[in-house]
Length: 326
Image 1 (cartoon, rainbow, N blue to C red):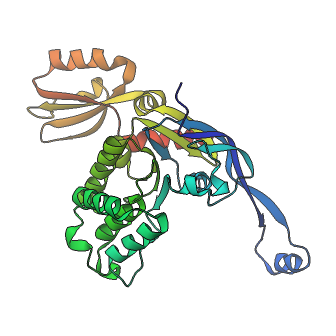
Image 2 (image 1 turned 90 degrees about the horizontal axis):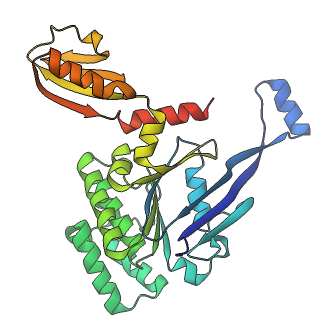
Image 3 (image 1 turned 180 degrees about the horizontal axis):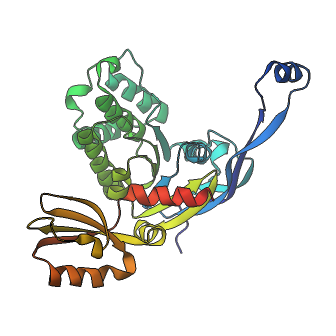
């Protein structure tokens, strides 16, 4: 049996922070006796990633996603739990470990601001001791995949956000890591650039068999890249499984989009009418009755076209989070 690329059991990270209350009296009390409390950023989560797997790591702000990625990459030491990445303990920061992983954070810069991106790439080559021949080959592949040619000679400060993000990703992958942690890699990018980054991640995974753990608030990223998702909330795990199973488990309805000659028909008899204009109606119907209602629509009305869809993934995730708050 193949060993997991990432193994997590009972991972926990607790911070001790001061508890401050409003008001002059509370301020005076804090000066004399500081009141402390524990905050569990990550609360005993467990899951494995198989070699070459691309997994979406989802949760609202403050759920513990970035804290988890920092522990997996060795930047933070956990309070408790067992973690191995490629068979090694991340926080030992062994050279053999660091050569095989990378962490890309959409809101953090690793490129030097005032020099061309190619100079930062050369610095990474020296840090990772990449042979010149390998470096030229890898940089050529990344330049081709990410369309970096015109960007390499420009100072980083002159690049747009999307251009800089492409260069950041290339810099993080020059040493061709086997495990890639991506924390909001498309944040702030326009739709076209998001699509290019997604295409690149897919191609990098296909070519090199890299294991990828991805956090994103853009559900299009998750739908395009990840068959499996791990969802956490308040530091604990809510769901781990196929995205399609998540949709089925947390939604009790489907959406029927039907194109009619007009919207004069009484559609309320078939389900909840979400919208209806220019002969195009959207109905929300119970999942268990979808087939029956579809038959009725086709038999009763002059249907031009009909489409059955699961609810948007954003809506599904909202339901998951709502359950986590109960």
